[in-house]
Image (cartoon, rainbow, N blue to C red; front, side, top):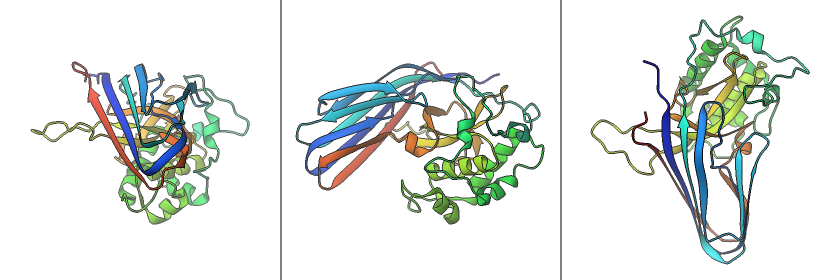
Length: 301
C-alpha cells in the first residue's frame, strides 16, 4: 500500500525576555511554509506581541515567505507565534536501480538547468557563505560516490556514513560554528550535519541545498504526545536529475526524508533560512524560549 499524504497543524512559538527595556527592534521571520513540489500550504499566519508598528511580507529569491516587522515602543518581552497548516506528500522512493548515475548529474561550467519548480539548479553547486568546497570533503564523499553508482544509493550511503562517523552533540558547536570546524570535530547538530553533507556533495560537483523545517516526533507506545515537544530541524536536498528532481536526505537520522519531515524554507545554507533574525536597541541580557508543536490533523496519516 503506497504511503499517504499527511496534513499537519504547526505552531512555532518564540519568546524573548529582556533584563532591560528594548526601545526599538526590527526582525525578519522565516517560519511560514510555501507551496512547493511535495508540500501544500493551506494557510499560515504570524502573531507578534507587543503589536508592531510596521509589518511587511515578501517572497525571497529562494521562494521562502519572509515576514518583517518593527516595534518602536518600550518592551521587556517579545513573543512571535507562527501557525500554519500544510499537507506533505510522500517522496518519490525510487528504487536505486531506477536512479541514474551520479556522474551524469555533475554540472558543467555555464550549464543552465531548471527544476520542476522552475528554479535554477546549478547555482547550488557553488560556494555559499557557510559552505565552501574543499578536497577534504570531496575525499570523504568519494567513498560513497564510486564511479557510476546511482545518485540515490550513493547519497543515502553518504547520509548514513555521516550519521555513524559524526557525534550528535549539542555542546560541541554553536550556531555560527564554521562547517570546517564541525567536520574536524566530527561532532555537531543537525545544522552542522547538513552543512557537512552539502559541502561533500558540492565538492564533487553535485547541486545540494539546505532545508529547514520540522520533524514530526512520535511518542513511545502508551505515552501521550507532548505539546510543544517537536523541534526545528535541518536536512539536505540533492538534485537527482530531471526524472527524480530534488530528493531530501536527513544525515542526523540516517535516512531519506519521509512525510515525517515538513519543509519550511530552502537556501544555500543556514544563513538563508534562519527562522528569526534582527536587531534591537537596548535589552541587556536576553533569555530565549522556543517551542514547536507539530500535530497531524485528525483523519490524515
